[in-house]
Length: 246
Image (cartoon, rainbow, N blue to C red):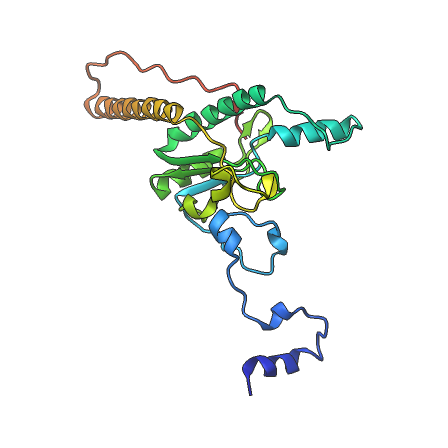
């Protein structure tokens, strides 16, 4: 006799209202595996395998999407959210400031291979930020320090993400400006950032990391040798007022 039929015969008298998932094999959720987010969240009938380590971290719901913020403001004022207006130029400038803040802060932990901010409006993806580092140790350092910190008064919730290949996670139609699902698409709508800005920030971050390595080496030599030639101490980059500890 088929094992699943036998199992059903045993379980049915005990728990006749058990859903079919009780007698079938669960499989991994393809959306969570590809995107690190699923619209069903913990109610999903499939498995969300959360990695213990990854090169990629997800900072959840931290970007304040201008459309969502305008909708919330309209609702709080008793106005309809159907016809909210957003100043596109101001929203773009605010986004670039946000992106630079996170790029600079995350680059302190290691080299960023990718930093993506979602333009999606679905509850399970709105405001998500994905950061992929060159190795898992750098990602782990970033998670341990960033989780629980505050950015503009918003507490950061950070976790490892299974996403390492963003080609599978991104909406190709959005990248080609042809997505018909709009902000509620279940694939990532990555907000575009000028490559010249990314290159400039990466050059600055790499120079900062080189200075930090030289400074650590200088301190090590001083501890071992009881002194040294010294030299001008590097002036630390001041922490942005947008950030605060846990």
